[in-house]
Image 1 (cartoon, helix red, strand yellow):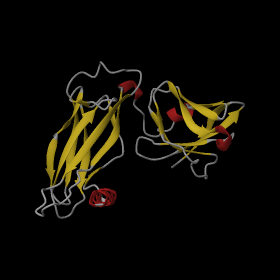
Image 2 (tube, rainbow, N blue to C red):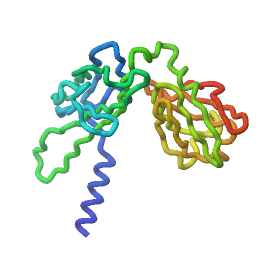
Image 3 (cartoon, rainbow, N blue to C red):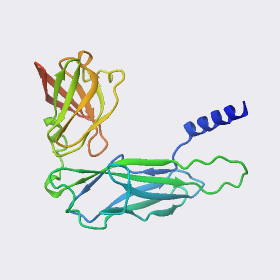
Image 4 (cartoon, rainbow, N blue to C red):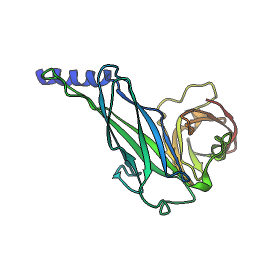
Length: 243
């Protein structure tokens, strides 16, 4: 019984915990021109200092220090204060594909100060966001943010849709509905479709109907909606609604 109660207490504590170290964005776009990119972090705790540990991973989740790395790997952030993490090139990026984006992951883990109270459970929370390296020829000008996503297509296959991304950009779909004002269909799980590839949407074609609406995440963390119109089994984007 004691073991069960202890496990329950641990779960409840974890659910109620809030990250002290916060990142200033939900995704990172690393353009090819600059040799570095600065990210902002802040300590949301107003009374305690925290250590912030930062690192990068490749698309497979393996920790890397080349061709890019996060600096400094460890820093102290005072209560209520802000800090910076620099994404720095450490080698040539020429080995990365130049006709499409490359996927990395940026991580920042908070390390709380040692508690003065005995038998205290301390949680080290971690933030992990996608980082996209974007070759110089693929840089997106301000105002053209949704142009690439307009090229996505859906093809009905039985009672499901195949999503095709002919663009050189990664696209993350976080919701799918049958109308612009409708709720996301039950059971839909967010998917990320790689550049120049296809993926099963994982939502019922009969539920989405002939005018599916897909919500994607743009460079700034916004969530515009792609409104599709279908002709037979093929659907194309007819408009984009800001989100």
